[in-house]
Image (cartoon, rainbow, N blue to C red):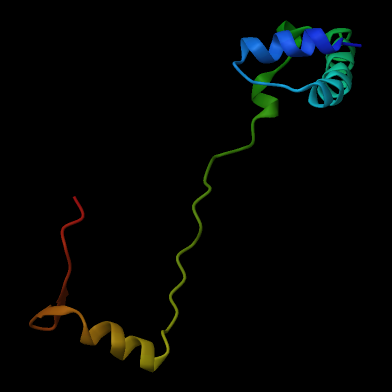
Length: 96
């Protein structure tokens, strides 16, 4: 378990002010994290044998079909009344 002084030293490196009560709390919390990290270090992982492509989701052909639907008449009239028109067409700003 980390001591209160070690926690205060770590806090000083991070330019944080830590009181005695906080140091006691943080010492126990950081100790739990460090024990978990020790468990993770014990796991033998050979990264050479992993097929990374098998772990990636399939991103091919993820386009959804276009679906046309009608707006409610009231919403359509409000939207169209605010649009600029050129003849029968609605004028919009350039996208590109």
